[in-house]
Amino acid sequence: MRVLITAAFGKEGMRILEKYMEIVYEPWLKTRRVLSDNDFIRRIREENFDAIIVEVDFVGKRVFESCDLKFVGVCRNEVRNVAVDAATKKGVPVFYTPGRNADAVADLTIGLIIALLRKICLADRMLRVEKVVVGGFDDFLDTYERLRGFELGGKTVGIVGFGRIGYRVAKRLVPFGTRILVYDPYVGDGDERLREVGAKKVDFETLLRESDIVTVHCAVTPETLYMFKEEQFRRMKRTAYFINMASGAVVKEDALIKALREGWIAGAAVDVSAREPIDSRNPLLEFDNVIVTPHIGGSTHEVIDRQAKILAEDIERFIRGERPKFVVNPEVLEKGQA
Image 1: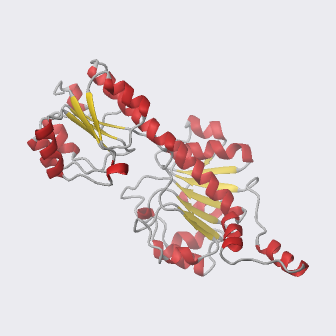
Image 2: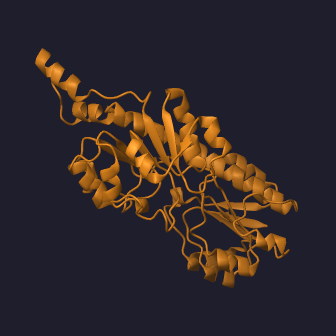
Image 3: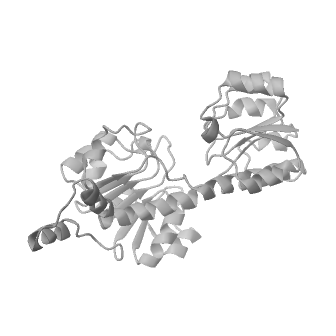
């Protein structure tokens, strides 16, 4: 069996797969290429690949209609870049890696919250860009007062979306002594995770009204699309901070910019934006009370290792005739089509 891997793939996952197949490793981070359907069809046919493992490439239905693949692996939390219906019709299982970057995103979330509260980025920017020179005691006092921040302990943090990432954010908040509110209509009142972190499930309006920090970790669905508009920002405390680690699609960016300009909220941190990569002319970059990162929530070395291990272990189960854990179209296994 031969497999083409264009995803970033860790060594442990590679060692597992090497026991069963010949690997051609061409990670997109090094080739700087995203393959098209035509690219995949040509290479699968000419180089006799039996399977492909991707991360950012889009695999359309023509690939499945034109080629006989034994499986497709996707190093992502959700499979949005593969024509799953076409794969299912052809009897091709599609493996994926849920939770691969949950810890990484949760870590960055806590980092951004603290950086906002303590004005860490502003302090660094003042010294590097504004070239602050303290010529006397008054200058020192002005700088000291401008950078006076808040402690995280005792704050109320509202988590929108209590999946893998939201739950991990809550776990990291516990030692700080925060009050944790959760809004997620798919989480039951008796969910054990709520009890574990001492969180209280509330409705969306209550979360907006009572939170000192609102951090967003929900999936993009018809219900969450642009769920944060002017109305929602107006309902938050004027002293509250807004964190978006989910998607630019859950926030009306113009509304967030207006909320910041008019002082409806105290500040924001975003790792995602309406247009990515974020343009250096984006108005969000004009605010001293805003931190912007270029969608790096899952950009850690550990994520590459983790996604490879999750995927390789599942593919190994499949090859051994065991039940895989993370198949987006398990019906192909149930029908014996794979």
